[in-house]
Length: 312
Image (cartoon, one colour):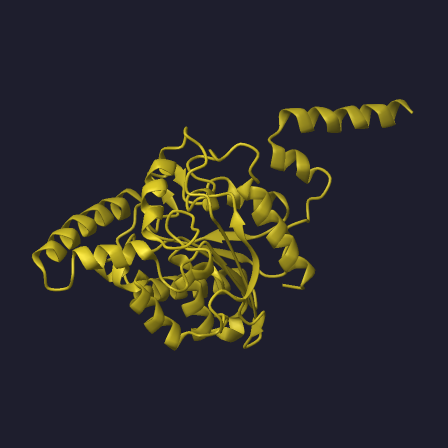
């Protein structure tokens, strides 16, 4: 009896002193142990770790690893075309497949990263088990249309926006320790309604055939999922909320500050109205979010368990 009480006391003590995900793992350490590795593709800004300290996916890889998952965050140009960023992810994915010896990977892309994972899935479909889009504007983003209207191709305003945007992108890439080519307006062109439609015509797998419906749950042997949010401003202490509260005005539908609810639909729509903004989707800034809103880390863990249960 004494030994049982002592063992229980040790578990309780560990749960109280360790972080939440680690304590949770004491009881279920294989909850997120998918068959295939999880590959995370970032959206705009493209870094995996900034200055060697700031993670793009704040706290998410650790939460997934605590449950047994093998997780590989990737990087990309801060701003560039969907195709070029797709090629960057393709190279990294092939390296991950070679290093791990895995037959396939589960691709997860946030924002512009959603285009990247779709690109890779179409290039090497036999090596991809699932594709998950997270707050990704599959049908384009209203803000990009606004920027292109203000700075149309060939106009002086476009050259100014291009110069400033690309300069900022280059700084971000440098601070991330990367050397990717940057092109701000190529990124904006990819995000416009027309740009997204062009990409979709080449990569239609998983897209809805109706205005706000779901896409094929499985296509070309690959499982398709998506989720998104509709709360641009939800915490006054989060500086990103002010930004997304303003940028969200560019969209005609409920959105997360950048991505419209229906525009985010792809494959099986797990949920399209999380009380999150675009930054909350990756647990930024530093985990600050609206009071009583779901923890992003929990949502990612639940999805990993979903993939595990599906044999992926």
